[in-house]
Length: 422
Image 1 (cartoon, rainbow, N blue to C red):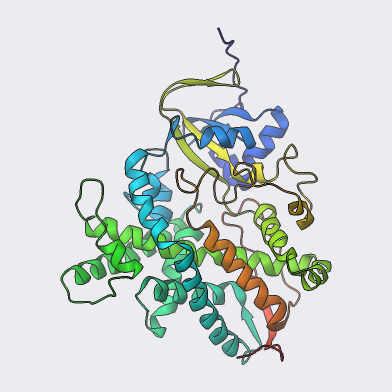
Image 2 (cartoon, helix red, strand yellow):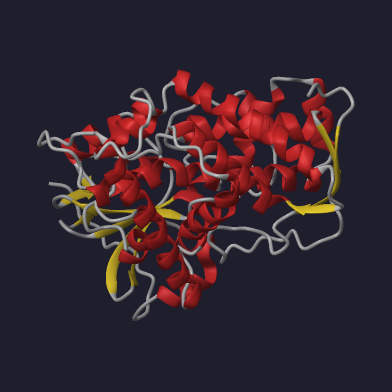
């Protein structure tokens, strides 16, 4: 009979404020201090088990042991995910609806998105060249917003681009905020959901025509497991969930600029070795903070490594800490793209957008599109545009989720490189 060990505890009544204060490093700090990959804490008055590391990730993405229903805090549903979204489903219902997203993210459709994004980047580069300086993060959010809506088959008017971008951006920028910023994120989501809900209804009533092969048409007329179309509100939520993560890639593109600024010697390697771009992008995804952790609930009681996890227990997987785990990565706090030259993707050690098999688990289905868009952005930053990074506050704090520098990355004197063909 297996011996049951006492799960180490983060002593105290409640650690919600500490989590907000330490942000991305909350779980990792306690894993180091307690010398364990599992510990118990209390968040928002509820018991939670925190896990980290490769084997913990493998456990967490075992769909027979965990479910997402009732695990995601309401504040994230009201800002980041939306009610009844694919992220809140489990089992066959989750797999069925996730196919809708996977069908929108085929190799062919990702290539189509990149073609659209290139055109938008070219237009933006012309505009940036006429300005003394730009706030790069905001500009890229708008660029990606335009590209995303054209990609799904619903081009937005130029004058609406900033409005749509602000509403989509507020969803992921305010998800971990408190006070007025969080409530503004809720308001922005409600505004965008209302627009998309009206669009769904107008398409279904033939007042708006969209191409039958478009992603938008696929989402509007998708039928769930019961063979019925999603209600207009849920369809609107899922339309947002295909375009909003595209806009969020702006955070990673910001990190590309920051990495090139902080580690200028990497430019030489990138110029000399074309394959090095892949290593560089993977290291940016590992090194910089994106998701802090993800949540699930135990479907039933079980033991893991001698520890008992009870049915219904809230479990948090340390995403940031696993990407910085010294047992998985040599010198994890150093930026070393070369580490990926010999790295073998096992799906549970590099998990910036979740772990496991993208087709069968809750791993982000848009991960490949993210990598491809980062590759496109890096090509522009290296080979198609010149720019200066003036003195500014590029420091990112681990208590800011998502982690965006205060300056939002200011670029000055952006010009098209002469060899770039327009």
